[in-house]
Image (cartoon, rainbow, N blue to C red; front, side, top):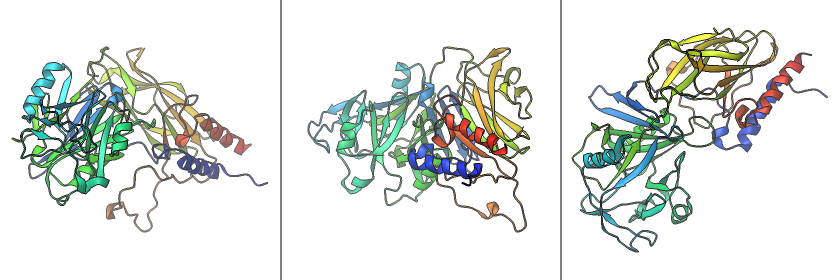
Length: 463
């Protein structure tokens, strides 16, 4: 019986993984996109980073990246309850009214109670002409539903809720059943990104998104967008550019405002009844690190060169300075043509990622090659290791095409169109895995042991 080629086997494995696994484990054609063009860091701490983009007209857009797995905390804040509204909620529960107040008051109270307070921003929809005011959608805090909200009848099929646990989040459809069956201790209701008659109009926008940034099947990253002059598609697409898998909309217009570390980035005179508070994590160690991607699988031809991106987050208290103090080292395995020691290019404050762009060369012999990378400070290891699993195909085997990722591909532009007669260089396949060989992760979401099997098949193919 004629045997399958290794490229066919790889393709079948990816198709099988895509069919059996959740979308976040589908095959990917490369690591997550880095900072979108035009955005730059304006503030950061462990667990939280704020990016800003300046427009020619003087307007700005800001995106907070809140990593719950790094110890950042999201809290829901609200003004004093004035009337309990017992039995007046959309689902028969409570619909209290709240005092509205300036966002600065929310920041002052939040910062006084929390030494690691980082940002506050507006949240819920409400009745702007009422004072005190009820909220439009549910608010759950510390495991208790504070308000069901008064509900918005015309958007029944477009209501969403942001569920928040200490280490992860989710965006799910909002209904009585989903609200009361959710085990999340913190929930904030909102709307789908397409709701409203003025969705294309540039105005104040506050959006939230979630991202499984380490591809372990859990949405540990919450993203928050603020701008005084954005349309709903612009807000949603910006969050997707930062990696968001799901997005939703909170109150906007004159309600949109943002204060971080007592600096007002987006201002408004409007008083609001409810806000979102973000706290950073206070590290215990001066120096600590965590790989953004613990493991990668790459597929190359013999002697093919490719770029390998390794990102490692600074989760300590002190800034990493460039030079010989902090270095990425090749701890074990094949050298892939990379130096043993790789210096840090620039200073990396707490909460940000150090980035190494390494040029690797595949070995001449087909097979499976594993390389272990370790960040070091001086001669001491800093944080856990990161593993590269390289599958080198036989020369006569075509490189299998990448499968569709969980994210839709952006439409092509004339600049991306191949020119007649032009030949594009061969591109590596890169698969992000939650764990290394011997762990729980694997190629396209399959068990990590499958990587070893595929590598052995490459070797046996030559015999």
